[in-house]
Image (cartoon, rainbow, N blue to C red):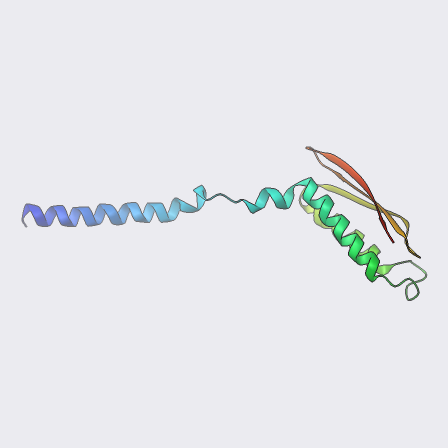
Length: 122
């Protein structure tokens, strides 16, 4: 084997080895830009406000008279459980369910922040 052949084969092996290492370790250096926005308290508070407003506008007080607006009750339970999985305490309290205006007090608490807003949907 000549020196030129050895150099060429050694170069191919080294480049293949470095490519394999880069492929294996590449995921560790990738930036996940979506993660902070999805777990931030402000995002969760704003998302809860939007969802409550949409559910209040779709609500039907007459068909669910014994418990009030069933959509809002279900939304409250699902949202609070979803936030708890992320380590954030979300509390949605309705002072008026039916008839409109629907009034909701939405609070978010975590180790990093506390926020509370009142939402009135006419």
